[in-house]
Image 1 (cartoon, rainbow, N blue to C red):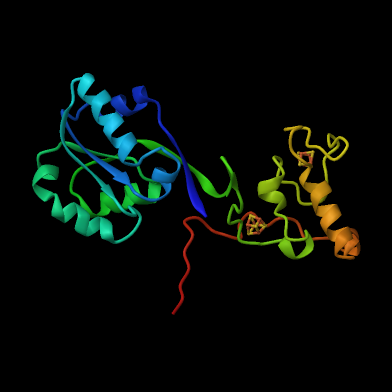
Image 2 (cartoon, rainbow, N blue to C red; image 1 turned 60 degrees about the vertical axis):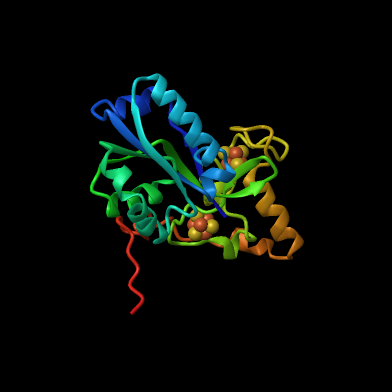
Length: 213
Ligand code: SF4
Ligand code: SF4
């Protein structure tokens, strides 16, 4: 699993840093390093671009896993340089930005957009689960219609499905063709004839919270 991210445009980053003369850069050694959106190379590239834009760089670090508690200790270890900065620019996923913000008394600015939790298919990362709170995989042959179908349809294919391909992206198989084939293979096509309850959009009340004790 990976937290899929993309870098924000430099213009947006510099706008967010408008009131910060001095910036401390924080990268992440896990997901954004794998995706080349916020590891060491990207932090150093941003450092050069920001210096060229007239910013003073107070320092930089790459935390092994920015969403982890280790962030607290990493920030403490560079306290002096961080105190010299007006803002912290973070190239981790949004949870890493929240962690930095939790433990640093400086504004934490995200340098990337967090897109989804995904899986790796070669050079492509695809969303696998939107954490809808009401999983239907039991009757869709283990294929998620919410993340595999661009329309998130739960009751079968739309009218645009064409020879097993998706009308939104014809390079992809229609999710509901895949679901049909999987259920056919499993001898469970009868599941498609059963009336399923409508999607409960309140299954996870935001903000999501889970109490285990
Ligand atoms: S139906 Fe899809 S989005 Fe919902 S929990 Fe199951 S896999 Fe995740
Ligand atoms: S063609 Fe299939 S996958 Fe594409 S939007 Fe319609 S139902 Fe969803």
